[in-house]
Image (cartoon, rainbow, N blue to C red; front, side, top):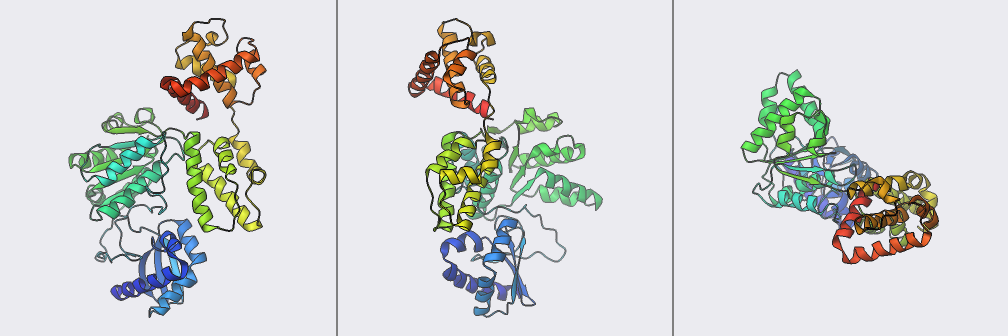
Length: 454
């Protein structure tokens, strides 16, 4: 019966694609996994709750109509969240061949649901994340294991999960026979606990150690959970010894995760440890431009001032999720009320986000960071010493004070030992000029900026 349903669904896909267009079909319908047709109901799995809800609300009628036109009896569709293309589950994606169903009662090791939009094509690359992106692509596109494990770490909303999902999608596309398992550390612990309760730990071990690529997100979650850490350690070792690829993510470097067993910390540091730095202005602007193009494709009637993107990239530096959420809110507001997205509208619509994202960097904090970075005394920032080893860092600190705070030039001058505002102005211009010709100064300024904005 499933084969008949698959044949009908394949025909229905062509009808739906013609009706809604290839762009909408590729974004919302193609990622669906067809689960069967029974009792006048067609059942599908979507890669996320958002995608499932969107399909239910916008495409249920088109899908049901297409199935009926293809010869089925379909009164309604049911869309749940489940494993689609990249999982080790079962089902048929739109336009894809059927996979082999498991025997009744057979255990299936299932990946966590994957976001279809989290692909390499949708990942905007910049200096803060270029190494992480390159490492992820190497894992996804090279069948040999070069770096093992790959450990990605960084703050919230910097792209760790996006890259892990992208690895899964690319492997499923290139080498679908490889078994890829992606899940969070919390899910690893939950499945381990369930295996203990059911006295089925051997099956748990066999399943986890039979994969070709294991990816565990937010590993800091298992810190302090002794039994789970022990099982994770043995699973890790077994896969490494078998030449299988492991990709791990965390919110901190392995050495900074408290209550993580020393032997696990040591193993995680074996391979390639990659820090995803906080986004800089250029990367934030690139992300916004990419997302704005997608939004305009969905809402072509919305009028949009491109200067809004520059404004948001400057003002919202906390993380990419907040940045994307701000843009989504603007387009929703513009579409619903019929207003153009202008700077004034953005400030009105995003007042709460902008207040939360206002920089709270102080001049005192800047002086401390700069003094520490250049191995100087804090008093050197305000002293009369003119030696270059002191004067240049002081100028860098003045430049950062001007660009990262709302203080005036006279106020900055007073904080730096009662200096005149023209001294501050000279320092700002000097650092700007040096940043264009001296790579070391440029790197120092960018690093200090990231530390202060983090």
